[in-house]
Structure formats: structure tokens, C-alpha cells
Length: 212
Image (cartoon, rainbow, N blue to C red; front, top):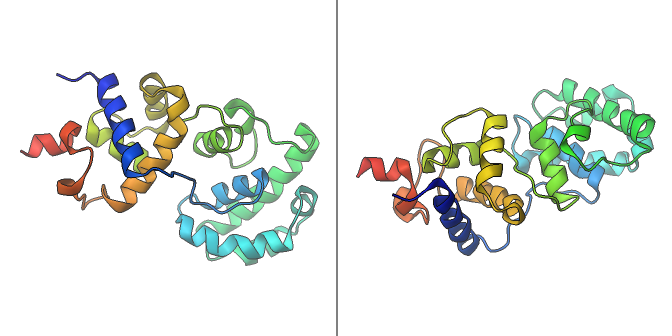
């Protein structure tokens, strides 16, 4: 029987072949823009966020612009995004805290990033991985679903999924593996209607093998 470690390495290699150019699907021109886009993406599709952010980033160009923004104006720009009032308040507060507590620089650790208003571990790991190039596990819905189906983890709790996968994934592969799982979750392992027959992971997938 294949160990979880071997199954993980198989999945890493199979997804590398399937998706050779992984990348975050949120559009951003700076680390802070990525942070804002990631905050907006909670309970909202990346496609919708990418429709909203051009107007937001053209109106507010700097950290200081965001820190001094009228929350109601930010709300108006992002209102087609779910929970827009909370997100608008968080975005303005994030900018203010970065200026007051971090000298206007994004911190490069999860523990420091989650001190920012509205920033959870998923967003913090995205920043650590994509901005600073450090090993990180972004436990989004696609990663959680796919790794559970494969049998690599047996929990839907994002923090526990992150902890388990940190033990299994080669650190230098972890960021791209997470991005590839998002791509695979959208294209093949779709929630409630997975295309198992064409899946590059089916021979190690506990869910698929249990149906045979």
C-alpha cells in the first residue's frame, strides 16, 4: 500500500505535468494589491475580484491612499463582492496598521500577517508563498477537497489541513502544488461533479478507487 508521503509525491509530479505554469489567478501589481485582492476573494470568485480591483487600484494607488480612504467610498467600488462592508473596513484598516505597526512594509511571516485586520491563515500563506517565495500551504476549498478525496488528509479544518500537508509536501513544491490544486479543482476535480475518468490523480485517489 502506498504511503501518504508517496501519494503526495505522485500527486505533485502528476499535477506538474498537467499544469506546468501555475500561478495565482488574482491580478495584482504589488504585494499590497495582492493582499487586498486576497481579502476580497473570501466568499467571492477570483474572476469577480479581478473585475472589481482595476477601479479600486486606479482610485487608490498607494498604501497611504488606502489608509486615508473613506470606507463608504471603498464600499461603493467593491459592493458587487460579498460582505463588501466588512471587507472595505478591513482593507482601510490593513493599510493603517501596516503604516503604524510595520513601517509600511508587508511582514513576511504568517504569524505577523494574521495580526492585520481581516487576514486569516489562507491569505497570510498566499502572501508568504507568492510575495516572499517561502514554503507555504494555502488551504483553500479546492486544496481541502482534493487532498481529502485523495486520502492525504481526513479533515475539513483549514488549519489542520495546512499542518498535515506541511509534513507531506516537499517545502520547495508546496506553493505551486496549492496553485495547481486550484486549477485542477476548477478544470477536473469539480465539486459535486468530478470528472474522475480523465483525472491524472485517479490511480492514487481514495475516492475514485473506493467506487471501483
